[in-house]
Amino acid sequence: MYTNRLFALLVVALLGLTGCQSARPDGAPLYTQVVAADQPLASQAGARMLEQGGNAVDAAVAAAFTLSVVRPQSCGMGGGGFMVIHLPHAASRDGTYVDTAINARERCPGGVGSGTFEASTDPTASTIGGLAVAVPSSVAGLLHAQERYGKLERSAVLQPAIDAARGGFIVDSAYMVVAADTIEKFRAEPSLQTRFGFLWTTLLKSGGVREGDRITNPAQAVALGEIARSGRAAFYSGPIADAIVRATRDAGGVITHQDLQRCMGSGVSEVPPLRSFALGHTFLTMPPPSSGGVALVQVVSMLGLRGADRLIGVDEPAFAHELTECFKLAFADRAAFMADPAFSPVPVHGLLSKGDLAARAGMIDPARTHGPERYARSSVPAQSRPDHGTSHVSAVDRWGGACAATETINLSFGSWVCAEPYGFLLNNQMDDFTTRRGASNAFGLTQSDANAPEPGKRPLSSMTPTIVLDAYERVEAVAGASGGPRIITATAQALINALVRGDDAGAAVSRARLHHQWMPGTLWLEPLPDPVDAARMTESLAAKGHAIKPAKGEAAVQLITRRGVQHGESLATYTAASDPRKGGMPAGTRAE
Ligand code: GLY
Image (cartoon, rainbow, N blue to C red; front, top):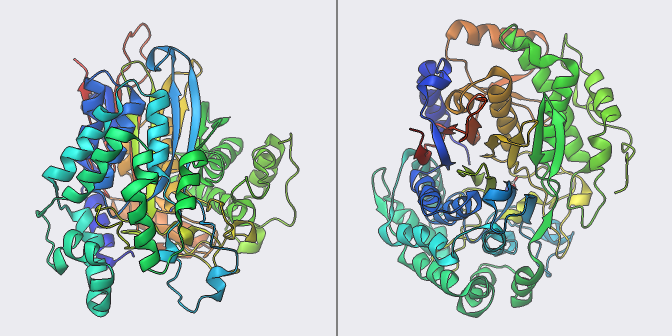
């Protein structure tokens, strides 16, 4: 999925960062309410809701539905997602105080079991075509959030997406990177052009799509209009449901009307967010089946316990080593323990207990890295009490409410299957399951048997929507990302940059990042803008034993940070940034 072109795009983006690296909060635009998405029309859709009196949930939902149209390679009505919401009394619909997490992750269809993919002779069965499609839950999740916590009418929140589908979006370089990669595959195997006709003719313009082209999708406007009028029933029953069942069946899949009905009834669950205190801040983030929330909290907690945050700005290579070791420990636990907690117990409280975090942090050797076996555990930690294509939207409203929403159809353009004639692609989230024991998935992640497909189960995810609060429960940051497992490492680094370095949002998302996911044993490194610093970083990490490669397929973070606390300030102000690696742009109300 990732190409040299993407790497080139990153390098160009990062070379342009020298200015951003030194950007100060005073130089960045300040907002009183703002949305950061990875496509400008989506941010503008959210900002339109804020201007109409909507809250952060209305804004995030409007942006997410718009992303379905303008980022069809990343997310949409055919996918799923997670949302973390924090609403003080004034921000909520009915004056209640809300901290919640919404789980709208797709589920395994009833007709797929743990041996389905192992029995298949097609190595692409979990990534391309009908069998790759898990039951789409995005529409149920977004409507659940909006109807329960938004302030506006559903029809108002859907309108920007309908407008975008009718009016179209302009193809940008981020779209072209994945379009060009997909066109290459379709040219190499021309039968794909007829098998996945909507993707080929409409989204790839029969192989001729160019940067600057406009892509309209009146078919998706019809589907969105039906949802605006009739709510989730319009998607999970009737002609749209018929289209989903037909499209997946024709492409070799097994989704039934019962699967869709189940999703409408109980497809969305609401749970308390993970709440943890680390580095002087409270993190509200997503519990399993996201692995991202647990991993993020492990990483920032271990850094804090080691005092490694104090290395920032003092000895950056030493900090990079400590951070990498934290990532390796967290990803080893991800591989061993993470799955859908509705099907297998996940020892969240054990993994996040002070004792376990201290023990794991104590394993880090500041002098060198070690082989993968050192990071893997021999036993499950005791419970302390019972118990790729992707897109992210961060939103804050004028009342201090916040919403972090991550949506995905998994790999670029999902399964390539379109729910014709409704103009939206269906996910290939089945690849996030452990489809073949012992084998890694498209992101190179090895995962446990507890994550094998089972009817109704949700695949493990790396999505990490996160809200950070201060001691007074005021929003300090809203973050999340796209990028498979890089979501976890990128979100952690952007938040560390904002919270520890004191970066404004633009500088925090723009800094060069690193990625390590325990297996394979590679440390992917983006180059620092200054070649002398870059060489020192690489040499120092190589000397500690890290196997370094240039970064590839980097994540795109959408970040909002509150400007330094101003005593007596009646209205909070924020900086906001869409990651330059994917080319979005925030939109909102500027402070006077
Ligand atoms: N499909 C990417 C993730 O959920 O991690």
